Length: 100
Image (cartoon, rainbow, N blue to C red; front, side, top):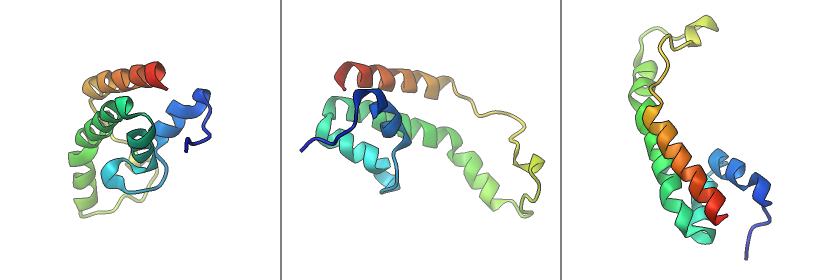
């Protein structure tokens, strides 16, 4: 049974992922594996790339001795490098446009 998602909102809903098992990318990844297997691999690569880009910095943030207590303290100062994730995102979106 196909899920009732219009083609205009598919990539947005898939990239959002929704709630679900974070190990497999949530509902978006599960839906892709069932309904659009040609897209599932590129979406999984996008999720893995995003996690790799921020993973070490997120771990460091959680391990800081002093908690952040101000809005300005939330700023990264230096943005995450996005060259690799932007390329993987472009590939994933192209696959979605082609197959969904």
